[in-house]
Amino acid sequence: MAKNLPLIRRKEALWGRSIIIQEIRRFFFKEGYLEVDTPLRIPAPAPESHIDAIPSDRWFLHTSPELCMKRMLAAGFERIFQICHCWRDGERGIRHLPEFTMLEWYRVDADYRDLMNDCETLIRAVAQVLGYGSICYHGMEVEIGEPWERLSVSEAFRRYSDMTMAEALEKDMFDEIMVRDIEPRLGLQKPTFIYDYPAERGALARLRKDNPTVAERFELYIGGLELANAFSELTDAGEQRSRFVQEALFRESVNRTTYPLPEKFLDELSDMPPSAGIALGVDRLVMLLLDSSSIDKVVAFTPEEL
Amino acid sequence: MYTVADLRKGLKITLDGDPYIVIAFDFAKPGKGQALYRTKMRNMINGTILDRTYRSGETFEPASLEDRKMQYLYKEDDHYCFMDNQSYEQIHVDENALGDAKNYLIDNLPVDVLLFKGKAIGVDVPNFVNLRVVQTDPWAKGDTSGSDSKPATVETGYVLRVPPFIEEGELITIDTRTGEYSTRVKG
Image 1 (cartoon, rainbow over the protein chains, first blue to last red):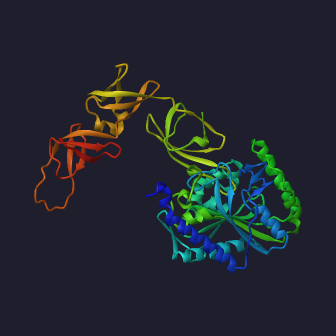
Image 2 (cartoon, rainbow over the protein chains, first blue to last red):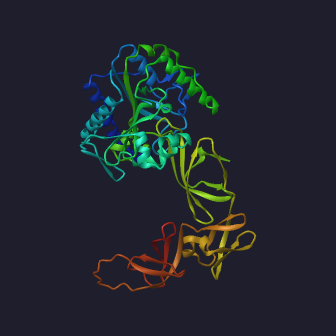
């Protein structure tokens, strides 16, 4: 008998993972997407307040393939997807690995509502291949056949918290309330899209024309598990530059590493047509579909096991 | 000094002057938001449970606890008396600080006593303890009730379920982590 018992026990989950990834690819090929493979090591990750990149020989391991994929949109690629590893320093828990697998897809002439529809059809297709009509996760049965719930962030605060979204932002309690009171209640009966985040929480998202205090951004939750983050892309290069500068200033103010501005991305952004893009955690999707209690059980090796 | 990165189940820290043990821990990061460290902690003196959420950058003082090898001597009213194996110093421990450990205390049992500022706040007993059965009903041969266990009282007064073949006067091993019967001691 081989020594590595934890790995032996993951055999079934790793087969499930492989089937899920095959089906994701099949879905995007059928929809006419080009699979791309952008560099994992880049000189300038997007400056975001709370995402830390891991340095790699003067450059950085990417935290998301977002910037390279958007440069492809700007160059005329209309539908692209990528499944790749991403790195985020310090993120480790039962739902987090500092090195994890991300699925991102981008399409032109679309906004965040179109991506909600994509999520519904993609996840239904993957569940169907596994023979599921609903998703059973941590003792819940989440119905996926009917249209999914769409709930604005401010409505979620009204429904699940005793503070409004504005109060929570003012008191610097937004993240705490989100984690403690809201997230655990999202997507329990059916999956929930929670949308229209405060403008300052979507550094690369377009603001709503009819309400510029919120960004056209959503997150998908199933069984309380955060699966995906999406937005209608900001295409205004000047606006994008000033938001990056703001994020970088914040990072400097809390003594976090600052990154060089991604100049090529900013330069080409003006060529980008109206588009929408989304990042979905593949390990999380596997966890959800295989009803795993920890992200550790759906990867071959965790960092601690290397 | 601990940082949020050190938080894990079982970590003992000082909070508002009291020692706390982390009993549940979760790393959370709501989309694009900051890292949050959610902990559930038990006050090691009065048992109060606290939920606290920390942000990165916060630090903690380790709980200043002392672990001493001692042995159990005797019970007096609602105090239990233990003796330090090295210094022969004797201390008294309140019944409510003992928790389940009091079910297994027999003369000379080696234990670890946890002290905070010189005061005992907990006692760890060995994982397996042998205790004599002082009362249990005899095994009725031909019993067709299908029951595969029966109650038994051991010398400390603790009552647990044992297999039907265990008789009064026999020595049994108990797993103190679960409080359950483990095996019969032959001899």
